[in-house]
Length: 315
Ligand code: GLY
Image (cartoon, rainbow, N blue to C red; front, top):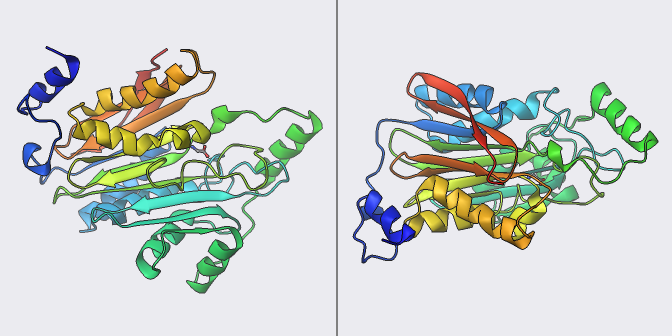
């Protein structure tokens, strides 16, 4: 039996079918879960769980979760305290997507602590999907967001050290984007993704995190997926969309993450020198994850438990 057919059979699909539709996947009901990237996913999940307990939906929980590392000055790759670009500006990218296929996004946003909430406002209060730079900042202010300096003493010091040593455009290892995927008690899916991006990047650089389909994708019939790592490569392969589409084709969530990464690994002759990880939830509550190299931690909250899980890289 071919791998793909095996995967289809293993989740109860007719081998002859090509694509999965919602009727083929039993929706996970009354068993909400939150799946987030890296160890800052643990407090993010905690915040999301509280929102779900208080009757919030998947989108409310994903936003609340993403806001935790955004506000944490020790989280150097997200929001306040995020490492700046080469000119010393903290520039932020974020997006959200809900169970109805609505999406909102901000890119290259400065001086606003919670880009994920601005992205949600773009989704809910405008006819657009994406606002960038000065326009995004003006919109945020018009919505009541306060402006603040996002550079902390520590991140300023790190940037000054980097400048002194005239380092190359690294480390992209510090791409610890927070992506939060949620399935609520109604079985509905939503996600949020937020980052300060590649440390010491060129001024104006935008990564995958605000790009719908790259950093995040939600299809309430099939599942959702999100990325962390070197955004340029995720954008080039429309990574999160690809993971969801692979699940639609019958891949289980981990196999879908691996196949999406395989395309990147192949494009780099089997030996890429950067990290990317995907996380995914299928509509039936099955979760999956994969990373290219080294290891990757994801935080999974399900029932009473909120735990960090370590996976090994594919190469
Ligand atoms: N994945 C985050 C970034 O590349 O900006």
